[in-house]
Amino acid sequence: MIKFLTLAVKMQLNVHDLNNEAVAGNVTDIRIIEFLDENGKRIEAPAVSGRMLKHWHYEGLRHLIINGAYSSIPLCAACKVGEPVRPAKLENGILSHRTAIEEGAEKVIEQCCICDIHGYLAAIGGGKSSREIASESEEQEPVSERRTSRVMFSWLMPVLEKIKPQEEMKPVYKQVIHSRIKSGKEFDDKKLTSQMPFNKSYASGIYAFVSALDVDRVGLVELNLGTTNLYAINDNDRKDRIKVAIEAYRLMLTGKIGASLSHALPHSTPIEILVTYSETGPLPFPVSPMYSDWLPKTIGLMPKNGTKFLYFGPESPKECEKKETINDIFEEILKQI
Image 1 (cartoon, rainbow, N blue to C red):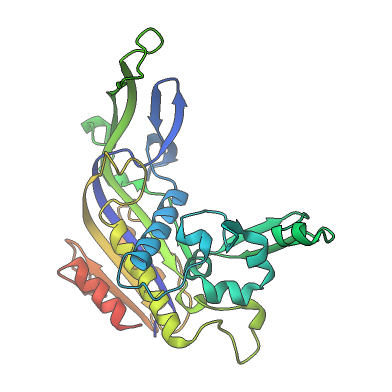
Image 2 (cartoon, rainbow, N blue to C red; image 1 turned 90 degrees about the horizontal axis):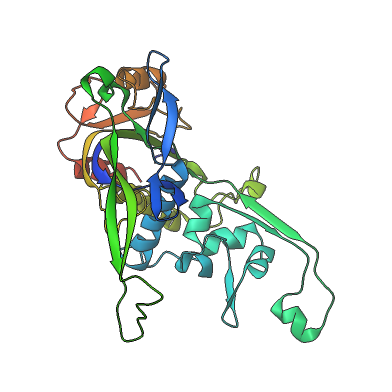
């Protein structure tokens, strides 16, 4: 069975607004990051935060569990509704983080796939819960609990070999004017204008990101290390969680990785994908496809024993099993679970 998996992706995104960073009046600007090219020269270009990518992997998990083929996988009350402060239990119609945390890490992991895979950090100060207020008991001591994420993401960054300022080849962005219309019987034209113009930026370019999924630690309770009962869930439940975590990557390859999806779905196409997995233990992170020599460097970085490469794209590296479609890659990975 797979113990560790990494993903390296190169994709083209046209007309996206996946990550904003500044709002001034009626102007919203896209996130711009400063970085170095392969010659050490400073460049500024649009990019997307790794927090944004991780959030949309989380959203992919939610949708596949709530609306998809994995409806038997449990979620806590917070993750069911997309509440970022997790875990939580529902008490009298109110989300209670304290109650969930006080049940202990093993129970939290057992009861929620997202808390298990994406982790959580809960720090709750002393105070009265709804149950305590009713009984007028003393305030509780502060409680805290932390679980590190089993899934990790880089930023989405421009591919450097496509940045050639002398040829005007780099990710571009442009302000576009939109307008909102105010109408209705309660509209007061003396107080409000009927048209409200505002500006948003949209970018296009070829981008790359890398990710890793620590498969062997899904369901793992670190406090149980050294015992015979390492996991909070059984093997079949672990396999279901690992499969849905892998399937959530598929949704991201369509450009479902950021903001403004209701009105600015990116015109996206995957260019290259390299999946590396190990059945023996952890792997290094892949070299980012933002670099021109990423593929041979990644292959040369990985341990040879127990490591498998699945590749989609225009190259034909002899160390990799080349797949004709992206679905072939996902089917091959899922067979190894």
